Structure formats: structure tokens, C-alpha cells
Image (tube, rainbow, N blue to C red; front, side, top):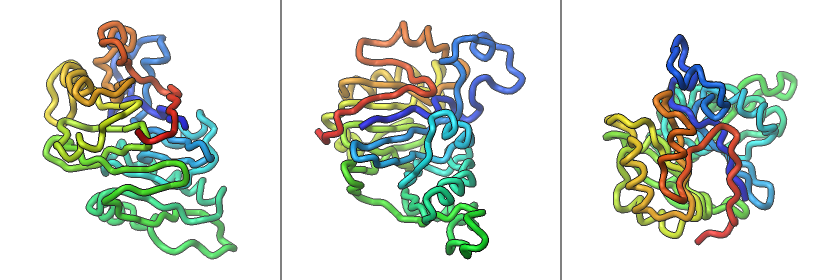
Length: 261
């Protein structure tokens, strides 16, 4: 089983338009960040996508993604969902409707904002010219082949959203706090991918020291931080983190044993 960091950036991406800060001008490719998303590949070929980021088309081309079996939404902020129209490419390649999972309220908002994506398939003579997704509310674990997918309740400021656990991997982006019921679902993790926006305080995201403290509490064997603004320089942060913790970068491949702990 493997997870691929499709995007490690925040809502503006890095470089930020018009910015001349050292990180935005950096030649280190690990400081070039598209919007946050991951791709999970199971040992039996399962292809699961978390969020349809604004940069989804570029990410899919870069990583050679040619199939998506299911999409798991964390929430409906623009950087996490506005690439939804590019799902039509996978509808066409697979010639099938693709399920989209998430909190009931998340899916309802997605249906309202992108109503054209949640309908009947087009007639065969017209082809898959629009995305066709099936909204499937998720409130408990789902078995997808070799992958057990568990929704993990987290708080994005005051907003309840989902992170997800895939066997021994958990992906928790846009997090400020994890309630006790969410923490209970994170025991025995092999890999934790966790929100870590910047050094300064933010009302809806973990800052660096908060992310480190939370990662230490969760106790995964390996922690990878993601969803950085241009305040974060990859090499600098990598040199500051405790052993077992590291920054993400676009295209990072993370092997997981595949077994649920």
C-alpha cells in the first residue's frame, strides 16, 4: 500500500501570486506546492483520492493517475473541492459513475454547489462530457478491497470536518483540534499525515509547535506534515523537527505495510 502526496500546499499554493519572499523565489522544488490532496493505492490496485483539489488535473498528469475508484472529501473549502470538474476524465476512462464519500453535510453542500456533477450518466452517444458522481454519506468504516477506510472527526476551527484513516495511515488536513472520539481512531498508526500551516497562530489550522505536540500525543511511527503556507521553508523545517517527523513535498511517496494495526 502506498500514499502519494499530490499537493502539500495551502489554499494559495506556493509560490503565491505576486510574492517575492525567499520561499516563493526558492529554487528548491520541495518549496513548490500545489493544493493539498493525497492519492492512496491499495495492494490490490485500489485507487482512492482524498479531495479534488484546485490543482487536480496537474497532479493527476504529474503522477500518472489514470483511474479513481472513489473520492473521499474532507470538507468543501475551494482548495479541496474546486477541481471536481476534472473527475469527468476518470468517468470517461472508466465509463462508470464514481462514488464520492464524506460527511452528510459536506456532500449536501457539494451537491448544491456542483449540482451538475450528481445526476444520471449522459446518453452513450454524448460521452462523459460532465463529471458523474454518486454522493454516499459516510459515518462509519468502509471496506474497499484491501483498504479499511475510517472517517476521523476533526475540527477545522469550529467547523466539524473529516480526516481519514486508511489501514495504518491517517490523513488529517485543515485541523485545529481533534476530539477524543477522533483520537481514539488513531491508535497504532504507522504513518500520520498532519496539517501544519505555519509558525504563527491561526484560528483554524495547527501552527508548527501545535502540530508537533499533537503528533507526539498520537504517537505514529512516522509523521509527515503538510498543508504549508509560503511561511514554511522545507529545509528549515526539516532541520527543526524531532526524529520521526518530516515535512511533506509534492510527489512524496509513502509506503505503508497495508495491515490495519
